[in-house]
Length: 469
View 1 (cartoon, rainbow, N blue to C red):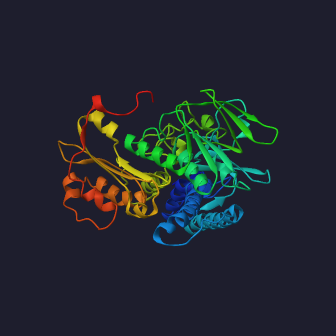
View 2 (tube, rainbow, N blue to C red):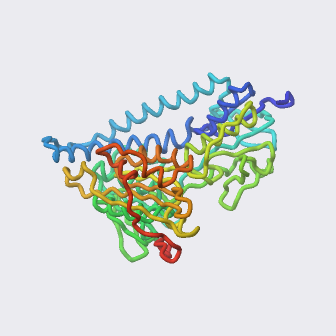
View 3 (cartoon, rainbow, N blue to C red):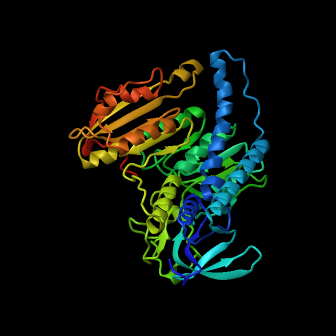
């Protein structure tokens, strides 16, 4: 720490990672400041995972009302009050915003509700919402500005919305077209369908969720179809027209057209590095604008660091939090906490959800033969409801060491189950460990410890990933 600078650490960006980094650094006695120009808590808290999960829950209640009839309840689905739900969601997000600010202030960090950018390697300019600006200096700087969603560069793209806009729609449209096949596209397809909209999903790939295990992707596609989501696979959108009545018409690459009330672009995100002054500070970025860092989050400038989605490596909130915490303790603490990034679990909150940790079957096969243990079944709940939903569970094992390389699940409670299994993966769990564990009956989770018969051996020539992708 040096008195030559105004602060020991300045964090640009008040998302989950930036707030954690600033809070931990301040708790160790560092002079810390943090600036956020939009939302405290970042994308996740405001226009991402938290409000999205609330939307998933809202859709679940409608489905549960239908399913209850299978258990003897004379229930009706009823109508959903979108405006009331959005108002309740906004109140919860405002509460969380205040929590983040209070945590920072209690730790002793100075909070700026302003935009900040780099003037040189040690100088930050802060521009207030009233237009007034000031300059401060910092010995160390952390870039934690996250990313933002983008639209396709096609004619008529301005007629569609992105994920940030979805949380503030004044009403739920009757017809919605989702463009994309990633997390956001499939999650919102399930949300809107569950709330009563007619939903179409347009993907350039044959299956959604490119990069996930093939059996997960197949299970998801089947579930979307059974939920009533119309899948348009292996096609792209050429252009979007706005019709006289305000609706939109999409022209697809296969010649088909779709008329809809809302077009939702879920085609990717890019780092928020434009206008940040990184070039003036000597901070290198890649062709997509992501900040380049080493294993210690250090940029091309040894005193400037980057964490979270702005690095475009693991674009997951818990990873950003872990990176920020480890960085703060390494710079200002007496001991450094460590997280394992070798097997990062993740979940997609589709209907039903899916979760995964470790290698896919295809990735494992590239390393050598892998034993595959797989089961598909109708969960107990839906033997009563009659809903056409099947659970899929899969374990990928190294036959030479018996170590579990990957675990995948599609079905109710998959994220909750996978979090526990991820602990075992991090600890080096083997298939024998699963086999000698007593199951909890009757649960879906017990299937993971009763998979005794190998389904197949995955090898590179038989890897079933789709070559066209």
